[in-house]
Length: 419
Image (cartoon, rainbow, N blue to C red; front, side):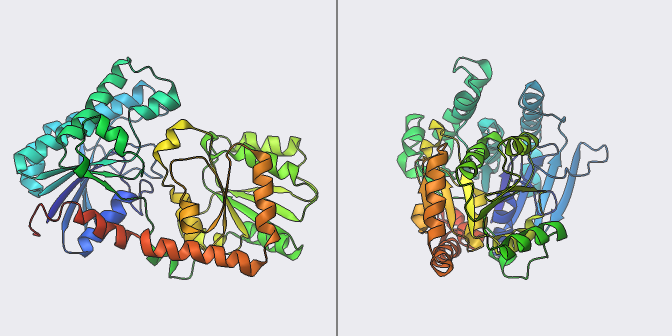
């Protein structure tokens, strides 16, 4: 089968996030399908942009996946420059529709760019090719910019996004959602009930079967020193942004002063410098319940980090948008690392509860987080290890890309013959 996957932000193991398109496409290629990913050259989530060398288009093959990169203008933040970037990509897709049909001869076209504006060129390509059209929901747009960014539903850009979401709900043959609680919302926008399939984010099990690279010497020395002092280590690995609710973790650490526990935050982000200053003001750079900040580490070193933690923390802000559910990549790392999880969230689903791999408490509540950590730390290491192994078993059975890639194919495999 020939699959055309359109995702503005698609990345790869060489370019960084967004990883999901790469891992799904790699599974489909391994199963004998041909996959072309079409993406924009500029995307804020990627660690490294493709080298366009002044070209308007670049083609390359990565692990058997055909990539086409379309040149788009650079941007920072969420202002007009990002809108121009989106518009350039969507308009290029529209203009290149016949070319893509000729080059790929797709039997399935997937529109998957977070924002729903790619549904119009994707539908045009599918119609020209006589292909099935699949719309993938990552976040709910325009609800996300409305509820998180405060945009009015009457804003022209919000109206355009709403038109795109409604069009996708009415015209896509199949809809796949990463978020598990979207049915009612999408049906209200015109989706027929039989169209919806739920496929969460996943992980690559092969990355956990090889011996992980050593941690950076400074981080390795820090963790070994904390363990030598008899301290339990609570860790966080990921972006340091407002959405990650790390202020609440600092407040919880402040409540736990004098207890034999240390907090290690690994990563980078826009809030890191401020969080470091706040930790010093709270006196969390001395005595027990100390907080340590470490630079980000490569993805390949995450297994080594998880092996050195006693508890992994994942926190969220209290946000009504989470009523539609969550599917955090960070939690998959925690699960695959066999690390018990302290999860501070209020959402439409709770992956930690589903897996039985830790404890969930209320978000933005330092006292609740401190109590949750006390509960987990009161367990023996073998009891915490049981929690971690439950998470790992759940992830291996349900959340690996070989499993999810097959599930994704079944959403449209009965509609088209296997090529």
